[in-house]
Image (cartoon, rainbow, N blue to C red; front, side):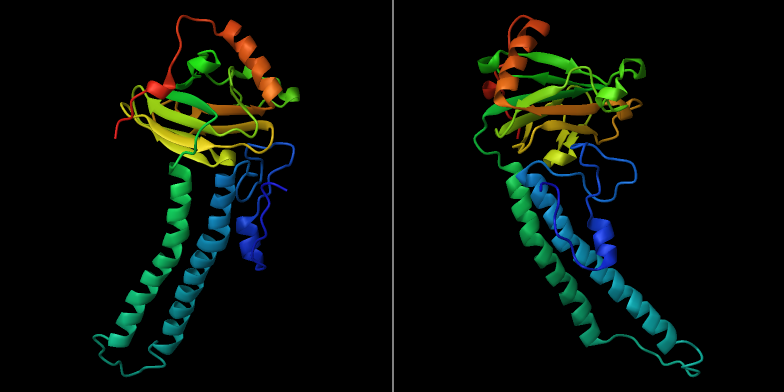
Length: 281
């Protein structure tokens, strides 16, 4: 089952690493949730694995060690145990240990971390290129000319427009969601027109800064249909909290039908040839 990973047997690790989101909401946080949202891409899987199998053991191990050392110092070197204090300046062995051990810990973390970064940043050959342009305070999506050159703005629905019975979520559901086909590599080209924003969809393992004058790239390949939510995750101004991202993953047939409707709904002059967009190093 997607979004579920075995965790360490210790109770505290299971609590911290659990993915306790409700099964009926695939791509959004739920009330009382601990841990990550259920994952829907290989990259998101690997992010959770890196957290569970590397970061949690290292964090807990260091915390336990430091706490044990503090307890030892309190009882071993208090005034009652040492009525006559000794003068100590340095200890070569201890200094070597506290230099080498942290370096080894960093090496252990570095290899899977670099592998994960490489997987996130090196985009495989895409089946679809989606351009997401951020501005204060909305997202604008562009589809390439070869699929119709559809482009539209995406803004959160007002409370009066929400249909909670159909699953709309306050401050997350938008008027025009980005739609992508299931099982296809989707390259997301992210940029901004004003300040630095961030395109983040946790369930898809996507988070990338949107920087003015720069076209940055990330990607995902959704492995199940559903609605997956995200938000701008950089503080970008007074309405920062009102820049949700809604991505609908549908079958190829449903995606083709949506494109037909979208060309009529968002009809305008021209299109966007994303493949020709320059990349700013």
